[in-house]
Length: 573
Ligand code: SPV
Ligand code: MG
Picture 1 (cartoon, helix red, strand yellow):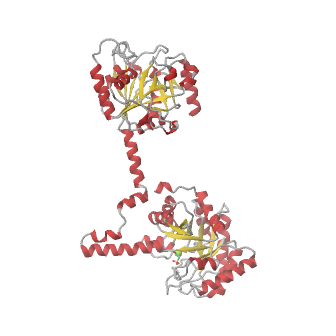
Picture 2 (spheres, protein in one colour; picture 1 turned 60 degrees about the horizontal axis):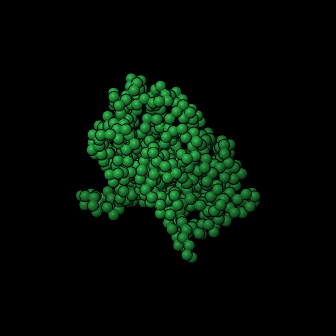
Picture 3 (cartoon, helix red, strand yellow; picture 1 turned 30 degrees about the vertical axis):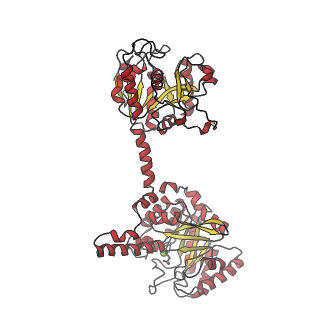
């Protein structure tokens, strides 16, 4: 889950203002660490109304000083510093994609606040709320803690200095009035609201610790008049912890734009943890607390462990595969083995290895012959075929028979290919599947070459081509002496064998090894190429599937191909 909630700091920062503007009212849930933030961010319910279904969720998150400090086992009295708060804030930002409002306590003195604004804005926080108490403040919900209010002018100047530091229009500095908390009444709150708005505050939060919302509502009514007088309606924020019997709609009707459910994620977790801890002590085992515990599987899913597992498995699928490249023979067109031809200063073999590495293919075996000593010192298992002139690619492949001990990719030494060809071949999960290209008919530059063509078993059932799956695409005939018009495509020289496919290939090879005379299109079995072997397997009833790729590969057949490969690689580098 965690990698799924992705947003840039810029996009997140502007969301709060946008949501308030669009919706008029936003609902915010407290978070104090990664997991509480994930839960708050992703919580939703589907509501049915008049035959329509719509989704209810929170619009953003509140990083509370009370719950941040309590989650660390500390009192809420500005003892925990900004750096420690930022650790939790960053956890929250890491796993969510909704706007975050941070409880900045008093903001410290004006200089402290300037630094706070700079740091908070930079990481994508949408708003900081600072309260007009004297540093170090005490939590506002306490019945009997001392609550010293800051001089309004001093607090206004702090707001002004903070606003001067921010570099975007998106970040909000919201002034929190503690007049009702300190017992100074609605009039004092209104006077302070006016002073702070005139100093540049982007909104006002009115706080109260009593059950009766009367004063808060009276303030809201007067606030509306004040804003009219000032000619600008800035958002009004409430924290309905003490008066939580008031329904959301009433808060909306009374003119509030933001309601913060300020500590409920931590309080509910604490209650549940206490209950669970006591019950394990009572029952001397944990069975009885199972109903109060989220199943591990759900936690795995919530925090992205399931995704990690799935990606590991997908990667594993590829790391267990060996690529085998027969590169022993001479070529008529070049002085060097094709594997060693330099394409933009790098041998074809090295290009192949880079792509295989990117696909997570763990092992590569290369069969050398001609100019064997010139092969580079790279991370492959080399096998040698000293009598390479007597044989061809199947002969070379079976010089590396040890490497055919599970799933493997057979790759001609003269093809360059993209990752997706390899990944798609492996993903077919088929026993034998070859990559073919159906566009060869349009490639005039290849007309000097005798192509390895593939004729498909006619299984066309009328469905659009793009809907046909590789499992339905079987090869009927493969080789050079086929009719181009009947052919489905050209074999790219890349084939994938599952464990079973590899076993079957070995069985057929050993069965045919002593064949006298011609072997399909080859003069002798020694001279057989992969296409001859595949034809033999098809004739024996094994399925050979094909996957159409149509781009992303290139065979270095002659100097012109080498030149186009150089051009292609230099433009995609
Ligand atoms: C917080 O959540 O830390 C607050 C709100 O500041 S209250 O605890 O109600 O003061
Ligand atoms: Mg607080």
